[in-house]
Image (cartoon, rainbow, N blue to C red; front, side, top):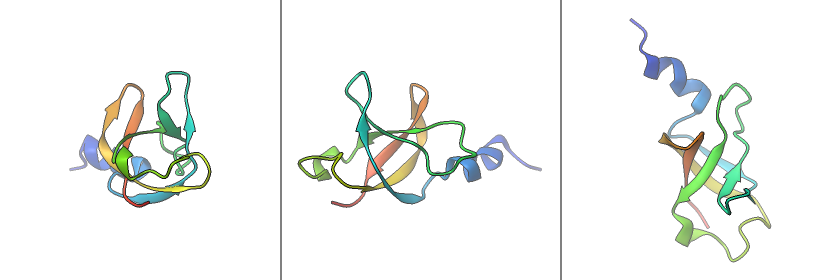
Amino acid sequence: MTSIRDLFSAPLAIGERFELSLEYDAEGRLVADHPNESSPADIAVCEGLDRLPEDPTAEPVAVEVVGRFEGDRLVGRVVGD
C-alpha cells in the first residue's frame, strides 16, 4: 500500500542535497527555487545558517532538504560552506 509520505517524498526530494542559488524573500528569509520542477514547494533555508559564507547570495550553497515545512516552503539545511 502506498502512503502519503511515499507519494510526496520523491517530488520533495527529502534528504537530498543540492547546490542552490539563494536569495532573500520579502521577510528577509533565505529562499531558493526547488530544483525538482514537480515539487509543490520551494525551499526556505532555516538551519545551518552559521555555515553560510559572508554573502550567501553570491554563489550556490550546498543545502539538504529537511522533511518539514515552514509556512509554504520546505525547510533546507546548509550542509557545506
